Every structure is written in C-alpha cells, then in structure tokens.
Length: 533
Image: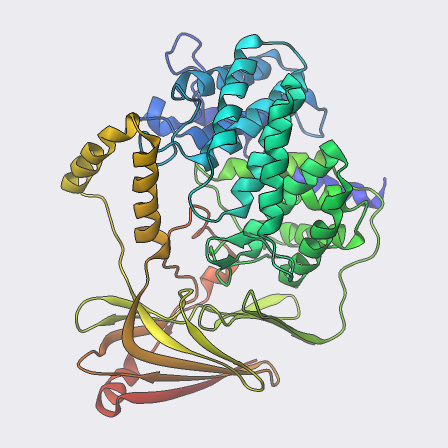
C-alpha cells in the first residue's frame, strides 16, 4: 500500500462519520411541502418561520457520495441518495425569494454568504450529475444575476472568493460570458484584499482559519480555469498559513480576527502539485486528526462545511508528497496581521498583539498554555475584556509589549418583545433590498464591530525565556473597579458563526485574579508575573 493512502483515508473517515447526521437533518418525505429541506429546525421542530439557506450546501455531500467510490462509502451509486440531492436543489429553488436570494439568520435578509455557498453546492452537484435541467439552470442564472449587481456588506474575502467560484460554475453550465466576467471581477476584488504578508482580510483583520477557506475557493477556481496569475497570491497565502498549523496538528484559534479554528484542506491538496509546503501543512493537520487534536464545529449549521471539504480533500489528494514541515528556530512578526510567531525548541509560541496579547504556547507536541487576556465584571455590572481588535500600542523590541484600554461588551439575547419588534422592523425588507442591507449593517455593528473603550488600562509584556514569561499590569481610573476578574482560555466577544466550537485548548483552566482585586482597588494599579514552562 502506498504510504500516502493511510493519510488520504483519514479525510474520508472524518467525513463519513457525519453522514447519518446529514440524513437526519433532511426532510426525506417526497410528499412533504418541505421535501429536500436540510434545516431540521424549520421542517421538523418548526421552531423557525423561515428555512436557513446555508443548510442547503450539504446537498453537495450527497452528490459526492453518490458519484464517487470511496472506501467505506456505502452510498455510492445509491439511487435514493441521488434523488435526495436533486430534491435539495429543488428545495433551494422553491424556498428562494423571487430574485433568487435566500436567508440565513432572519427573514428577507438576502444573505450573500448563504446564497453563494448553497449556489456553489447546487451547481457543483449539477455538474457532477451531468444532466440537463432547464429549471435548475434558470435558477442558477437568476441567483448569478443577483450576484452580478450586488456585493457583500462588510469585508469578507472568503465570501467574495466563493462568489467568484459560484459564478464560474454558472458560466460553465450556461456558457454565458456575463457570468465569467462577473466571476473575474469578484476574483479581482478578492486579490485586492490580500495583505503583502499573504493573508486576506476578514472584517477588521487577519483570521488564519478563514484564510484556509479563501485558499480553498481560489484553488478550486484555479483548478477549473488554470489561471496562472493565481499561483503567486496563493503561494504567499500558503506560506503565511504554514505558521499557524501548530506542532500538535491543531490550527488557528482565538488569536484570529474571527476567532476561528477552521481548517479546510482541499485547496491545499490541490496546490500540493505546485507548492510542497501545502501538503506538508495538510500532513501535520492529519497527524492532529489521528491524535484527536483538530477542532470540532459540529452544530447543525457548521458541520457540513467540513464534511464536504474532507470528501473533496480525499478526491483531490496529492500523492507525490515531499518532506515534512520542519523549521529551524525562528522569530517572525507579521506587522499588518499583528501576529508574532516563534519557535525556540521545544516551544512554539503564537501571540496576537493586535488583540491585546492573546497567546497560545506549545511544548513539543502539546498545547501547554492558552491565554485570551482579561475578562471581568465591573462594579457597574458591565463586562470588560482586553482582547478586541481596537487601538493598541505595540512595541516590538524585547520585551514584546502591548498596551491598550479595556472594552465594554454585552451579550445581547432575544426576548419576546425584542423578537416582535425585530419582526415588525423586517416587514419592509421584503420589498426593499436597500432596507434589508441597512438592517444587516446595523446588526454587524452591534454584534461584530461595536467597541466601547473604558478608562481602564492594561499592559502585557512577553519574554521568550525557557518557555514564556508574562508580565501583566492593570490600571484603574475614576470610580470603576473590578468585582471579578480572570484570564480566560477560550472566551470570545464578537459574533462569528464558526467560533466557540470544541478544541482541546478549552480544557485549560481559567486563571482567577479575584485575590488581587482588593490590592488593585486600593493602589489603582497591580503588576502580575508568571512563567509558563
């Protein structure tokens, strides 16, 4: 057996174990009005008044299972599986608005993310089945036509990359040049969002997890078009990504702008033929899979992203792998990303200075320390944190230092009154996309971009000496003081769909700073020192 076969089969195994869940989420009753719906909350529990369009992307998994002979795939050439995939495309078409759009979080949202992901899934499945269906093609054209004239709210490189890939598929199906031109326009926008350091912008900064998604979409675009101009930006993106596959095989985390542990390997497998580093990253990830180190994002909305991608990674697996990911000791600072990475054997350190000193520390092949900065409750009842992407003063000369203000955060929840008001406010959105766009912009500001500085200061210093030495200073001002304070290991403070999953680092205990609060309140300033080895 080829030594690579053992690695390749891991992708299939990780995907196949989720297939029963996929069938559970789907309305499989051909006489049901929601036949083909993959949003169980909508068709089965009936706790939602609209179907989530993003859920329909899982139909591509069904198409892949039907089409390809894969070890352990009992669904290959099963007519029932094919019927269900087609039913899911039909439901996507029936449940869309008249303009081809769909919703993800609330009615009349016209969510571009849900639309491009489900459009790619439907068009890719259609191409796999290689049959003619004029109703489906009309639907693809309608949705593609909407994408030609509308763009995402906010800066999300992965959404634009998926839009380009989806539009390319519509062009391949219809042969109409307008969709190719639009795909190329989207592609140009994606490339304009790339930093010289190699990463693509996600909202306010760099998120290595979402970067693997953007690499994935661009690599698939390259595979279909052989557009050689993509290889230079993709090489830079792969090189940047390689610093955030950890020694234990885990990847990314809360030090990214969107707190994600995403790792989508298919694009890297495609690029293995051009950059050996791409498959070296994948091999380290697969070692982590074997040892239970990968992240698990298995809720109904997120799991299919990974299931489909693992199947595609199996199919695009690059056999001629070269070497393993080995580096000599180094220190590297990505200034635009605000990320510092260092290897001093046996330690591997990642610090986000832009996020106030979020830290992950590894020794040999184990994560020994996870630190997301301060989180505490004030005497006013408000919650304050140090890890938001707001203005920080960064000093990059030994010792590494970051200074900033605490930010006030909230945890908005839906109540009956809020729900009724929100639904009333949404009523005009069914008639006006511009109104819907304003609603989404307000929600982004509340849940993602909102930052309220407090007159409380902190400073964190880091020294890479036999592990990591950390010196923390907190200063109070005015009448504010902490009633509770901790250093957390897995807390996040902005809304991101793919965050707060399970990764082994969440098992690390939080550090309780309550014993120091009396001194802090009296002196208005304390300094705390610790040495992690």
